[in-house]
Image 1 (tube, rainbow, N blue to C red):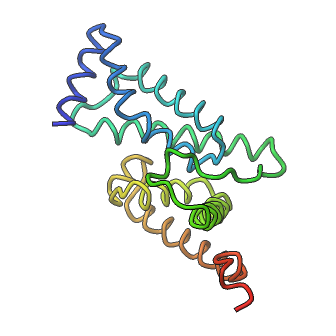
Image 2: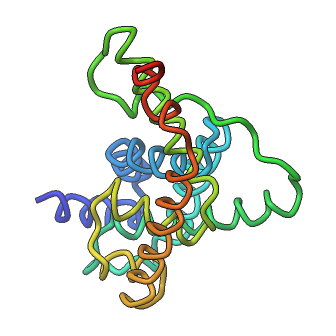
Length: 195
């Protein structure tokens, strides 16, 4: 039903109804923002990237294949834009900004202060580790483990092969495991300090 609604809204937009595209934005704005935030680790930049992804989708709507998932197509646009931003950022920035705590939209329950601190530290560590991955590895990890896309869907979104995605994920897991080994246990669980 949701794919049928998406296609209907796309057709209405192409027929000149801008409010129909507003329905698509409302439906997918959180997904697009979560993706851009995970990739860019900066709220302001993630908001700009999400907005740019929607603008690009709108201006290229006539190129959308209505047999494909609109969400997959939209996230593909967002992911490619984020990869471009990361590449440009690396050319101009000599050091990465400090990671921000996770956006409130990324959490669902309100934890207590101790849980919030531990969760925040773990989220910051995960984001820190993600930031150290090359952009194409990071995108594969985010799409696979945050969005639970199949290898085939990720390959389609990133315009590559399934074996390339499997290879990127394997290398990303190796790099993340190596980084985790290098981190002191106390940085993963402060409660273990002194025991």
